[in-house]
Image 1 (cartoon, one colour):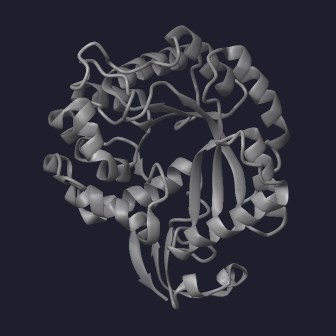
Image 2: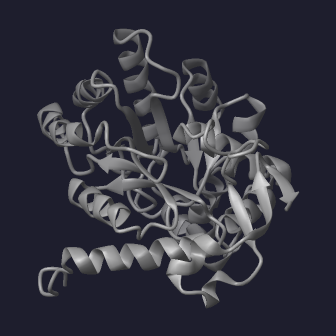
Length: 340
């Protein structure tokens, strides 16, 4: 269909970002870490920033999805050089996003799928090629976030990251990040902590797709997805968010899922539930640290920005250009609710 529908022009895309970022701000979300931004998309984000059209701060991961060689990644990095010194608190490049396996329909697993015993998901990169590509990124001073959903993908990614760390000693903490870590088992979690690899959890993905995932993986593996309790108990660098827009209730829908383990087909893996305070910290303090925003937000200090906001009137009833004039009556800063 995309080949048949006329593509929106730059002005239309900026208007779309104006509307979308205002809707995010209306839920109280102050910062979005966008994990799949193409170079073309980032150029539009820059135009939106210049037009004053962004109501949320954006930390972009420039997409290497679909690439399979270091040479392709080097070309992408050449494009990114122009953005190295153009960042500000509203818009900046966080790093580069890789995809190692498929999502819920093709995550790479150690055991065959429940629906097809001849299929164990898909690994997109050869490990040696991914090591070379990740090294190309870190040697230019950027960070890396890699999608790894199934347990085989998690194990393979840790192998890759371990080799990169060994060959590039002294990398800053948080340079290499695991996105999802869906089926990370106890051994893999311990290994990630030992290597100092942060992980991000996207609980709404489990909540909304549990029924579909049970068809692919069976109930036992679905119950093991996103083991937040295990990560926290090991002292992991773990943060939380959503893999797709989470509707009217914003980040709090993710907090709800992490504390209850509720899904569309009932509670799954209650042993992995965490407390409300822990879930809030993963979405605020830990997320700020992952984004490199710990000196910008997430602390009770003058001039710091709130992690989440509760508005004095419904932003949905306000024009988007008036959002910045609203006053939050409560803010969540550093995981604490503060009344203004």
